[in-house]
Image (cartoon, rainbow, N blue to C red):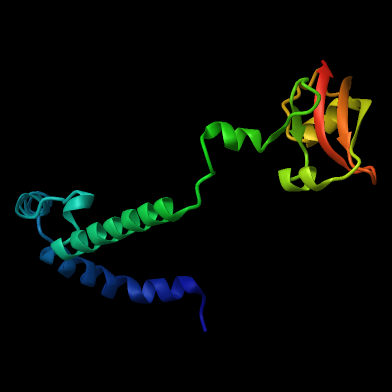
Length: 165
């Protein structure tokens, strides 16, 4: 076989004839522009909400209504804390010896059932307070804080009270 150049020379004349014949079938540039403008006027672009059919809008409405009813039913049948908001706040705090409130580290029922509890004064690092869920600034994270802990007979911490920061 010959090189690629020989193939190009052999095909050059028939391809030139083919191109010339196809050029006669192309529409002038202005015709395509006019056709596209007429098509755009007849069939304008729809917005996203216009593309949905009435059946699709109905299904979306029914789905939303069902979700709202389900959420309402769950909310109405959820167990509510007994009493006022003060009662639910009291479950998080343990009052002892007419001082400041302790912050519960264990469930309230476990603290009530604990026998022979004692209050121990200690110094806690700031990281321990952050681990207990209290807000500690990064500057104070390395410092210690004076605190009292309510401890069960077996030494398990039940509640915490910050004395000084």
